[in-house]
Image (cartoon, rainbow over all chains, first blue to last red; front, side, top):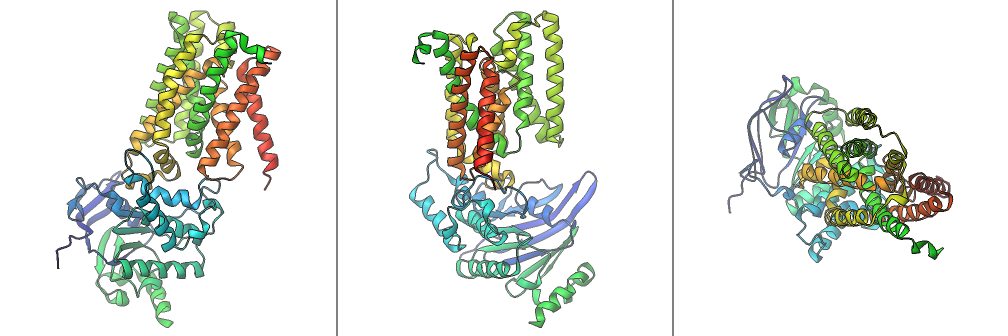
Length: 253
Length: 265
């Protein structure tokens, strides 16, 4: 077996903004093909961690490596798919069809002629099919339900042929049946195509069966390698007492 | 009606007007989608500072307007991206600051007269052949740049952060867009006037958005609305001896009202 570098390898990462520490001494490793979750209280630094990984924010200390390369030298950003937090109210009017929005995922890899080639079209089609939004292609993004919109955003990320998908609380404002379908699609992507997934959420119960690792972030980060027994992991219960009922709810069914 | 075009000034005005309508509506689409409509008003007032300086030192006011609008656009964009100020507050500061400065310079030049009036509200009679060349020489490259980068600009308008993570040079393209907008505004002051150009950049897109179509159709509609308003506005301006900027804006407003009525929902 050939050696595959870790998708993310973070060492002693620290981040302060205006003298206030948001993250300190954070180290983590996500391997290729893994499905990991990031949990933690609001304001605990989850979103900051995501922004640091994506290079949207600069760390005050520590190093980040992507696919073995230091972040500064990393150029293959289209291999990193990002699905941001859903803001349900915005862009009801935005003039974009589902197909136009999914196509955005190919823009960063577009050539000098700025045209879509057969390969681009194929990936756009494939991404829409995988997320089951092909039949919505001509609909405006503002006319979709929360669940449909969420799948379109993932299709956009998939169109760039990513090796890893980062989802930042994508399930806000989405109804329960849509969420179930959404988790099933993510599970498929991870199992069938070995897509690495980093899922930021406050509701870990629903994906506890799929994930291999949980990172708990509350300024500091702890790693739990046995998500099904999260509470027994070191440092978890005092950090995350509020999740106890979510986990037990999950184990009831 | 065709005998109108026997007059050289009318041909000049129409050529310039068509180019301005194309530029204003296409660049305006990206500006509106980014909730940055007030930028156009602010840059128009900055362009007025250039006009005032041009009148004071007796050089071509249009080039001075281009320079002033560009400097203002870059300063605003710089403040917005590096100082984390509220963008609408920055725009408001520049808008009134520019106007105050322009009024002082115009007073010093003793030029509160009809020539200034034509820069404020547009005057088709004043467009020279040379100015038509200038508008085309600058307008065609600007259109080419907007066309070449429209996919990227669209992505940025939809979601700036995600575009950035995809490796798209967001900061550079933002500077390019505001520069193009600044130049268009400065060039169009002869036709539409500084106080009214904002309307021609913003309203066609807002009206087109009412039709709830995808991006390409929306931009197409917006271009049509702008072309129609400019052509109709210039004819009205000629027929009733009114400032062309005002008649153009009335036409585009009419289209906006119609688009509201037929797209009630």
